[in-house]
Amino acid sequence: MPVKRITVLLAEDHEIVRQGLRKLLEAEGDIEVTGEAATGREAVALTKKLRPDVVVMDIAMPLLNGLEATRQIRLAVPDTKVLILSAHSDDAYVEQVAALGAAGYLIKQTSAGLLSQAIREVHKGNTFFSPAIAGRLRDHYQPSPDRIGALKRKGERLSSREAEVLQLIAEGQANKQVAAELCISVKTVEKHRQRLMEKLNIHDTAGLTRHAIAAGIIESSVQLTIV
Image (cartoon, rainbow, N blue to C red; front, side, top):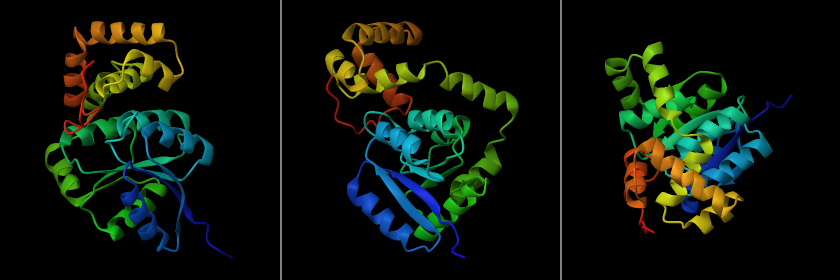
């Protein structure tokens, strides 16, 4: 009787990276790549549709970053495990994704064998971190209930829709473009923008953009247009 393969969705905005990951993973007899997403929003939609066992998620995703996509996936499809595969190894990113419910975190310099192992482990219900990150967690990070609660409260300062609006604004999209992307009215976007400024005590678009970069919502290397 054939063994059921672990189904995987690849969420990565660079096509050449997705192609490489697909080739590597499909060489494993027990892993099947059932979908690919080039944006965080597409990752959420495809996860809801395909219900993969594991989503391999990059953090720096356009339209909807991997952090917010992880939060939405964990809420909408809790049985799907999210494994972060990112160029960033900062403790702040690791703590954020752990608080959002990601099952593991690998840096992109990892080997194909380690990625396959991580997919198998998170599919079993375990957590899995790159060795360097795991070592730092053991040495410096004790996930006490108080600390995890504080991280969750910090991440929940903005609603899911507010986080989406913030990212699109920080990526340089005008209110009309944000409205079209999210299928809401321009007036609603303006209300979200005003609410963001009130919550964050920020008074202009440049300030919102700086906050988005500092919070890891977008990368500082992204070419931004301030409107």
